[in-house]
Structure formats: structure tokens, C-alpha cells
Amino acid sequence: MLTVSTSAQAQTEASEASPVTANVTLTTNYKFRGQDQDVLGSNGNFKTSSVKPAIQGGFDYAHESGFYIGNWNSSVNWLDGNSFEMDVYGGYKFKAGGLDWDVGTLGYVYPGATQGNTWEIYGSGSIAGFTLKYSHTVSDDYFNWAGSKGGSGLSGRNTGYLNLGYAYEVVPKLTLKASVGYTFFASDIKDNTTAINYYDYNLGASYDFGAGLALGAYVQGANKGSAFEVTGADGKTLNPNKARFIVALTKTL
Image 1 (tube, rainbow, N blue to C red):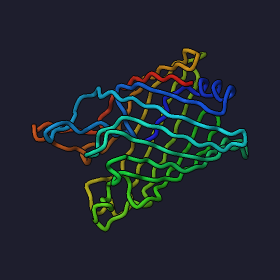
Image 2: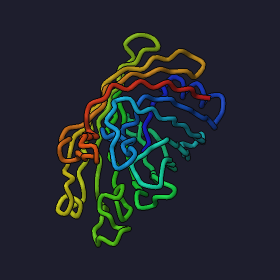
Image 3: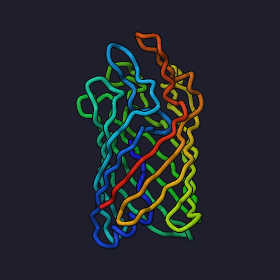
């Protein structure tokens, strides 16, 4: 599930030098839309620690016309038989009406656990540091919440996600970032599972050291955690929506 940890300045400098860029990130935790992505422990237990490191990275190609394609990957652990997430995406960026627009499509692929595979289309508009983005599920399922590949007869299609983000460079190289998102599940998921619509949040800052190196520190989490809690064989309960303090170091090439 794609997240952006690199600084905008580092990405801009790299893209001016070449249409192809690469990035690698080491992070203390990987959350997607406010939820932990490393949750499965051993012997039927769940990982409740706030520090669950992940390694992430990918490649991007941006054409001067505005079209782009890319791949992003991360270690994960929330599906049996899978420990690797691979995202593929493509889209088009352009300017109109005084705003920066971005439209595209994004696939989340989980080798060895295809029931989690999800495909979305998205669109966003940005102005004065604010970005409003909407993502819409077009695949049969949304991260296996409907269990469609297991023969449930349910569908996760039309699940949506709306996110408002803001970034502001307070001093040179130091950028404050904040966002709030809202996930609203397809009716089949809401009516037949424990999942409920919820908000997530992300508040923090990143520092650009130059030469493509950036350090970010954030608090990420979500509400409605009790609806997503799971209890392991050891009796310990994991709330994947719990707020976590996350530190991420990114190198862009």
C-alpha cells in the first residue's frame, strides 16, 4: 500500500537530472490508511509492539508530457503465505484552473496471497500546499475484506478513500506535514463484516539533508480501533489503528 516518505525537493532535483528515479526507505513501522501492516506473529499470536521495522523502495519514470509509471514495494505481514507487497501504478499529471492535477490507477499485489490484491483509480488536486485525493476501488475485493476469492459472494468494489493533506516548509529543508483520511467501505463489507468506516491521521515533519537523503518523523493512527481489534492465542489484543510514532529514513537516487 503506497506511502510517500521522500521529500518533495529531493524528488524534484532527481527528476530534473533523469526521468527515472529510485528510492529506498527504512521505517520503524508501516501503516496504511492508519492501520498496521505487520501484524501476524507466531503460534496464532499478533504483534502488538509499536516498533515493527519495514524496508521499502521502488522506481519511477516520469515523462515530460506528464505521464508517469512506477513500482513501489514493502515488507508486510498481514496475510498468511505473504510477506511482500508490490504496488504498480501509472497516471498523468497536469495543470488546469490554477491547480496541479493527478489522475491514475494503482494496483496492490500480494504474491502468494492473491486474495489481498486490490485495484484502485484515483484523482487529486493540489494548491498552496493542500492536496485533496480520492481513491476508488474497482477490483472485486478491497484487501480481502469481502472475502470474494474465498467464495463469500460479497464484493468490496466501490470502497472509497478520501484524503486531505497539507505540507509547509517552515524553514529551509524542514517541512511540516499533516493529513486526515476517511475510508468508507462498500455496502457488502459494512453489512456483513465487523469493519466500519473510519478516519485516519498523519502528523509530522521531514528534513531534507540534500543529496536525496531525508528523515521523517510522524504520528499515525486511526479511530474506531475496537472494530478492528484481534486477540491472539496468548490473550494479547492488537489494535491496528493505534497511534504510532514512526521514524523513516529515505534515500532517493
